[in-house]
Image (cartoon, rainbow, N blue to C red):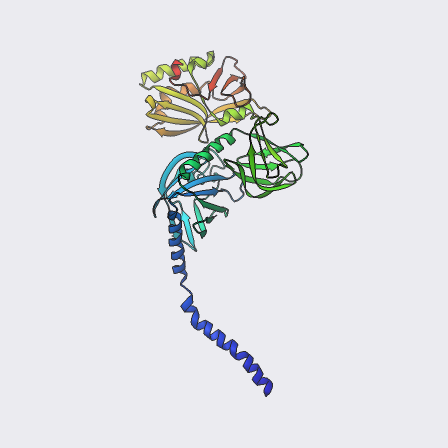
Length: 430
């Protein structure tokens, strides 16, 4: 009997505790909907609370194979946000919201080319990525944490961790300009080598802000953003036996004419190499003019001049190359009131570093003033003919980032074009 009483005495507090817990839970626990609504309101307050704006470390694609980017955001009300980025100098205002799902979700629900560039199909973003999926980026993010120090997000589609850090003062304008300049400078590079601790060089496979060490074993993809100070990686990586998360840029020297990127201990170096001429050509936008066209091309330019004049169209500028990620030809018409892009394929010839093949792709983009197929048919098509389905050898006096290159048709020596990075106005008369 005494044992039974002892057992009951031990069990009794447990029963009392459980009973109290059941009675007090409704008092201290909130309805899930209330908690989500409070989290949404807090997110709005945090996003708008820092009027200077936020810097978003943005990584599209769940496989991280399209690199990392930096987006700058100012949340100016419960409905409007202003964005710019390191790869798009436009400053664009659109709508956004923090909506209720299983938790608060930040959605950029109004089209904004700064961020939706990363989620558009490849057929709309200049052919980057697959036609249907593009860069596989997010424009909706689960809000994991929101405070004055940082906002931590998770891409709904990619699952990538996205961190937003607060800006100060005029950093939205000034820091974004620094990132854009760093991005432009980095885009000049297309080839890199890894220098290990023993000074030995090996090839690094580079593509869209990713590196792969191909010196041995299975290559691992290392994804990074470009910053004014160097490179910042999505996660800690290892190259040449050294682990790091950032690489700092060191200015050019006689030994390293393009500079290099190094870890904090200066143990390894990622060394930019001179960009092959064909890649340099494809990555930039070049001006054309009549006086710099060979005999074959001039006959087509003469027909174009006549046709455009008969249709009361004035050609102010004519470009070939890369325009905001689109390969093609750009036309500025009617004293700058009309602009358009006709996409072309500019393909690097395998096994060469100085040849490209150019062919008409045919998509038409209105850059202003209602540019469309009517302008193309009115004479601009003649300008493209000597380029279409032709292979060109590229030469330059300065092989390292030249400001001018000569394109020579490999089959028709008189079909030549000297093109310039500097703008040439009134191309028919220059």
